[in-house]
Length: 186
Length: 186
Image 1 (cartoon, chains in turn brown, red):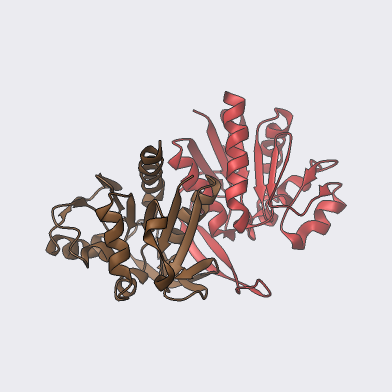
Image 2 (cartoon, chains in turn cyan, yellow):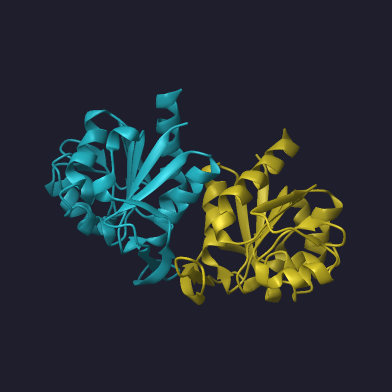
């Protein structure tokens, strides 16, 4: 069975870490969550009014399943990567050990899935140039500035790369990521 | 494809409604959420300290995908039923239209999955007698009083009935429910 890495940190969106984490476990796929350190993460929830006109951000669940710190990650041991959104991505990418991890997945054409603000971890290292991608609408300008072709759709698949806009897109996001992950092994 | 009903209300545990809802959509299975009325639900989150010694309950996401009120549910149109937990179940079962809905699934041996406090909607109508079941540990006494054989395990399957303890059991819960649901259609 394949083995999947999730890169997260405090401020990660609760649904965007829990859904992929439970979903991989449901499929009996090995999943490891790495974060700046091994302590539990504080997640946030992004709550929307019905009709989506306004939103709030508030403290969510504690996520107590962090298995390793970023500096202990050996990316060659993993077959796929997931980057959840929320506030975490803009901090996650500031750790120097993150760049070689991300680059490993792109250089080896392994499936990478990023949702919401997650794509900001990809743009940070110049890996979005010329890629068809989506992301949370509020950070679409950053994707475009980083050279990506931004598409407003629940999921965009471009080669090894799966991106989605936000947690209501989780069904399509995980369907496409699992398809790539299991195809590659098939 | 099968069609699944989720019965919920205000106070439903956020993960226990969202995971099944997204998961069924991921599998392209039709899913309908019914509640006392069609307005959005206030969900709660049950947060645990790492180590699980203490917990808190706090407001979670708004769930804006309620499609019908309880009184419009025609249970014969559905192939399976999911009852999420949180504070909702003890109120859900007080609506008189709920009893015939629940009984329809049991009498027709259709898959029923209940997690956390969800099993309280089953015990309320005398349907737990002699059934092997689990639930949230704090309501295990109520299951036993209602004549169920209580088992402390992530998932217990007894005929058409799938029960789990709480949201960290979601992977096993949905794996078993989907197995039953898709087998029956086989």
